[in-house]
Amino acid sequence: MTDAPAIAARDKDQREAAAGDGDEKAVVGRTVTINRPRDEVYAFWREFPNLAGIMENVERIETIDAQRSLWVVKGPAGKTVEWESVVTDDDPGRAIAWQSVEGADVKSSGRVEFIDAAPGRGTMVRATFSYDPPGGVIGEWIAKLFQREPAIQTRRDLRRFKQFMETGEVASSASPSGRESESPTEQAL
Amino acid sequence: MRAVTWQGRHDVRTETVPDPEIVNPRDAIIKVTSTAICGSDLHLYDGYIPTMRAGDILGHEFMGEVVETGPKSTLVKGQRVVVPFTVSCGDCFFCKKDQYSACDNANPATTSDMSETLYGYPMGGAFGYAHLTGGYAGGQAEYVRVPYSDVGPIVIPDGFEDDKVLFLSDILPTGWMAAENAMIEEGDTVAVWGCGPVGLFAIQSALLMGAHRVIAIDHYPRRLELAKKMGAEVLNYRDTDIREALFEMTGGIGPDACIDCVGMESHGMGIDNLVDTVKAHTFLGTDRPAALRQAVLACRKGGRLSIPGVYGGMADKFPIGALMEKGLTVKSGQTHVQKYTQMLLDLIADGKLDTTFMISHHGGLDDAAGLYKAWHDEQNDYTKIVLKPGMQGVTALQ
Image (cartoon, rainbow over all chains, first blue to last red; front, side, top):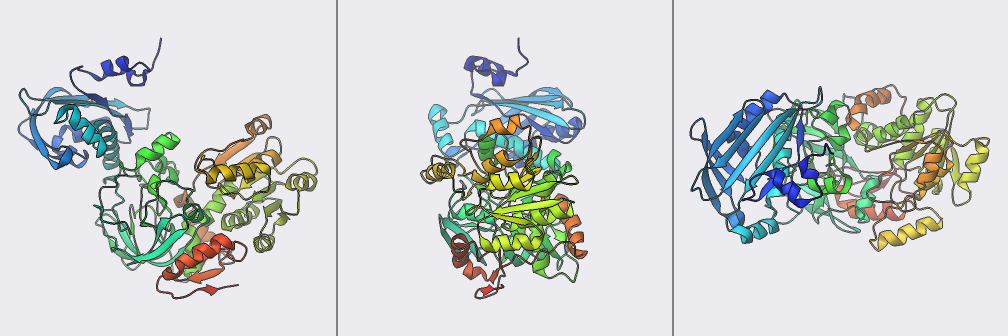
């Protein structure tokens, strides 16, 4: 008997089963609470091109039509990959799900849910991404090495989403330093 | 521009680095006129705080002139401002509760993982205090980029020289909040461990808040002298058994409130501190909370413990039994600077708070390396150091 969310299960199989389709590497980002009404948060996410400013590894997203969009994503080792994505579920104000079309170079899907937080606190946003990185297992190892590993990215993407919705900006410590040759927006450690 | 950079343990160097730029719409760029070295900078100097990288610009107590503003900044070029060390967005759950040091958005997504792992949730943002707090370039420099400039900086009216208001950035609100957290009641005896700048401001604040008596503890004669000038009774722990003294002075009850203004690099003479020191130096990873342990044991039953002193990690042998069995109330935290700045500026204007008495030295940015070392080695003679970009050479003020 439990009220615990599946992501917190000690049993790995239970955690993975909850994340979705067993075929891909499903990762669940930590839930964030955003101090904005549910409809506003939903509306921002539903305009997929907005997500490019939030998701670190997404270079841009183009709207093709009401259901379809083109995602251009940075893979490991400096390459870009693109694929067409289609909305598979749209419950306005509550949930959006999407997945890459048949035959796309990269198999991926995502689902985001918007839930009322406690009164006065805004909206809880829960997101699950499945992402089969280019290059398969080897690609994942390389991705991890360069800190582009999906679980970390997902968590960070949600934090950026919260920052943007609440403050109008994505927080950045891009700044002068005495450090040698470092791109100001990448604070990888 | 010139800036004071951390290069490693006990290695501070003033270097020429790129000027800051406007990155986000709410940013502003400040030309620094005065910037202080903080006691907590010594923790960075001593290599106690993880996630520093060679080249990081130090400093979180600074003020100056607005020289550039982003499109959504509310500041105006030419304004003179003091900037809180806390980087706070003003829009999140925590900022809205006036808990500015707990801001949920200021720490960029790429650096907030670390504190989430260490402390359970991502920490707020701060200037010049390691990548744990976001890796923001600090204020011991000629120019600083200030994010969320509509929330942090307080505009200073004419008629206040820098030294009078600079400490609004950190240590004055820290001392004030420390005293506020002690929840002082009429008739209270308040004991303060540590007579550095924060302790001295805590003493001043406690008396303003109506404490009947303040007893201050340290071992540096000069600092005890300053505490006495503030109106405290003073104890030197090298000569005095502190717990015995407090017991007697409070007629067997104990101080009603105890404030730990020492933090993680406590000196202390007991065997506990010796063990801590060995562990800290051999990176077995413990803070050195000797003063805190003593405060827990000295505090009266049902009393209050206020902890502004900075701690980073774990403490060994913490008397949690004493804390619980005596029913102590504990309040702690990094200062919510923005909550206090206007009120404290008003107190300074009314002459109720003296801020300049503790400044012992002025110097230029190029003198930083020598001054860090001097402050580290000679804490009796060096009580508070203020750097003035453009100044050459060190002046002792007392």
